[in-house]
Image 1 (cartoon, rainbow, N blue to C red):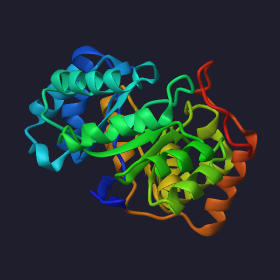
Image 2: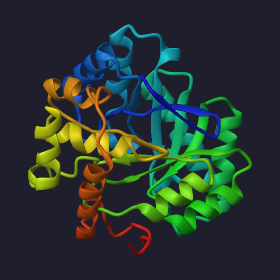
Image 3: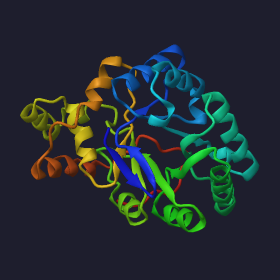
Length: 276
């Protein structure tokens, strides 16, 4: 599996997102993905599936050291004692002695960021995670988090797909050596996959529209993707994107779709996003 180097972390460029996956179906999908060649699994305390994810990792039979495991601390748990408790509980649920990447899931303006970053670094110093990072941080907060963290940050995980321009966030990540990890990279499928720019490239390369969109992501410097699927057959499709390349005209045609400015994950606790 191709990896992305980000401030000392070697992050597989495609992983399995597990948001909304539950129970035995989650365990089965994680195990099957790893058997197919995935080496990056993403979960979070808020997903309520860390036990199932851990069981899938064990069931796969893939050596632990070959798997890059990410989990996250929810935005209400960013006070120092809460963050450390959350990290410890995540490890207990996963059945692991460490994860590879621990992220602040969303920023929380009510909790001082210096306190959060200090606690995140203490968790790293304890060996509970190999690397640390953030999620859903706009450029202003990326710069602040980088400045406050004694240890380098490995990633900022954000929503990114051809309907949402994240050029400013990607540039901030690149400038600071972070990977930008894209969640919801396929949007909601449907109308995006029917766009002429996507459909034409799919026909030209003999690939599915979803494969075209994932390939569009991975031809951008410093980017990794974690598509989620509940269908076993989609796992092989999503990882089968390394035997072709989009040309510059195809990349530009898909990139033009970002003028739509559609964001899926925008909540009352979301930060102030960067202007397009």
